[in-house]
Image 1: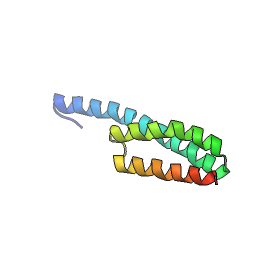
Image 2 (image 1 turned 180 degrees about the vertical axis):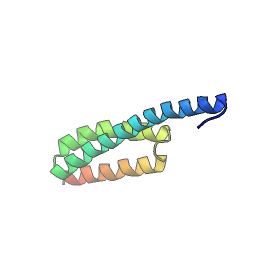
Image 3 (image 1 turned 60 degrees about the vertical axis):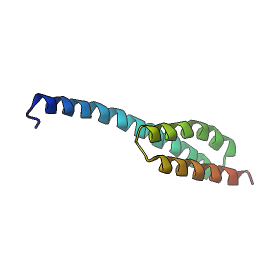
Image 4 (image 1 turned 90 degrees about the horizontal axis):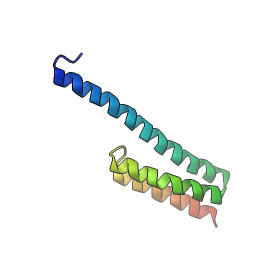
Length: 88
């Protein structure tokens, strides 16, 4: 348990940020899951629409430090490549 007032305040701040971070991470994962499900179903149009939602979520997560920016870029690249393969 925190002893000093500054440590108590830090604990409160951490709790608030944790809630925000969980929500952001959840939104990002849900957006990516939508794309992956559309790809599995073979629905290119649905996958493209889902990708329009997922890419900004991934980049937002990268800019706020939820995921590394290279990891986010790699995820976008791989999903885009899979969507492109659906068109063939």
